[in-house]
Image (cartoon, rainbow, N blue to C red; front, side, top):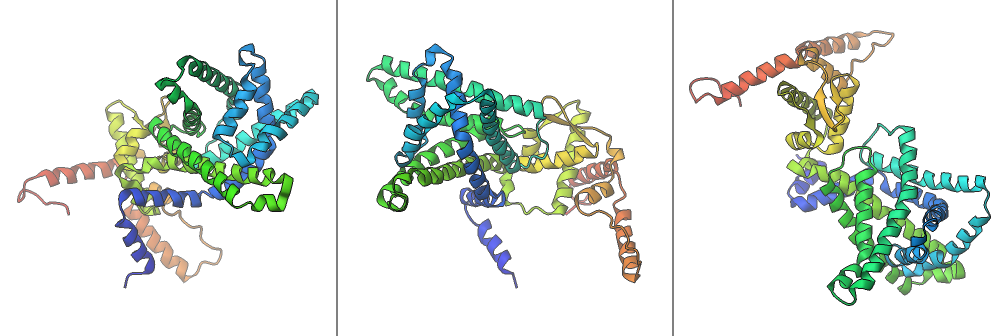
Length: 422
């Protein structure tokens, strides 16, 4: 009699592909603990928001062409990122906070920079966990990247806002003016695309980043309207907190905003599973062994042709998710069997004659267990059985490849001229 879990898997397998894929993304959102991560990022953002805005305004204030940037930046935040009910935090309190930062010493300004960098570091770790990335960027490169975002980001945003304002004034009431009226959405779309493309420490296809950025932009716009409607209709915060209601409302909004950002990140990382319906696979250690053998054989074929294979080609050929494939390549690389190239490709680092199926089995399925001090009859029996398994797997991948080519050649023979493999 089939179990409840078998019945559930059978029902899910019959769902339309888009709906089943959406459920897969939701499961990843839960498994990656994005709800907890959004809470952590909300707290970090609350501490780093004033330092971040202060550094941004200090950078652009050094350029006369951005003299109106402060008001434009606040207007951009209010119209695109912050609901009306929480706007007091930006319009009133942020102005008071940033005015007070003018009294800070050099050490105080350095602490502001460290706080802003801490928020970016937390986001970086969260994104790499979503993409299953275990190898971190070098510390120096990471700090240079963060500081570039803190300094160049405000300049690019100021240039975009200034250029948009100039074009809107020049366009009058024509069609271009209508398009430019939605420039905030376009800037948010560009920001999300850059975020999902650059932050993960792995190659991310541009199309995946753009699709997820579109989802996040639309979701954030819809959420902003629904959240504002909720606060207006259900004035619970104002009844309890009175004049301080803007703070809990702003905190809740930050949490929801980070949840949208992380949902877009999970969607970006999950889109690589769409090809070949890789999200439907049930992953278990035996499947990992099968994937590793196929991967090494593909890399050997490429080596014979004098080529390297990109993550995209390997992903499409093997029908694996990018994070699955990257994790498998990293584990094989630690054994010296695969090696990344400077062009984000991968190649076989050793001959197949030097890799045995037994080694792959020990790496990906189970490792030999050290015998206990008191060796009993059970240990002797298990040791004998596992020894038989090891003996049957003591074959190099080169021999396995020859057997596979022979089996494929046998299959291609017409009926009656050779055995056909089932």
